[in-house]
Length: 69
Image 1 (cartoon, rainbow, N blue to C red):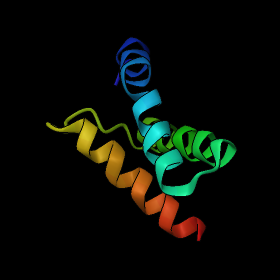
Image 2 (cartoon, helix red, strand yellow):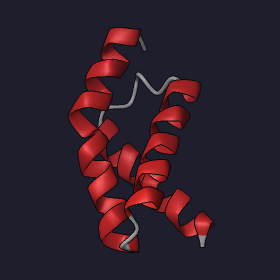
Image 3 (cartoon, rainbow, N blue to C red):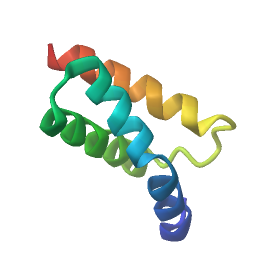
Image 4 (tube, one colour):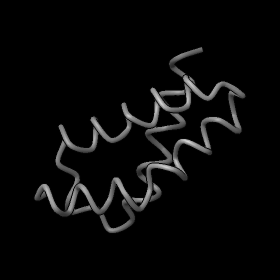
């Protein structure tokens, strides 16, 4: 995944991932932290061949949220 592709992915999806975690937790700071962790995992693993990257983002967010608790 190129930096430009990652930036577009981040810009297009960060708020929705953050809002999802905020809805689940009610904690804005936790939601921001988990959303950042989601995108760090995507960058580290280089998930550029995934057809439905948005579903993957929410799956990772869900798993990180569950792990937090």
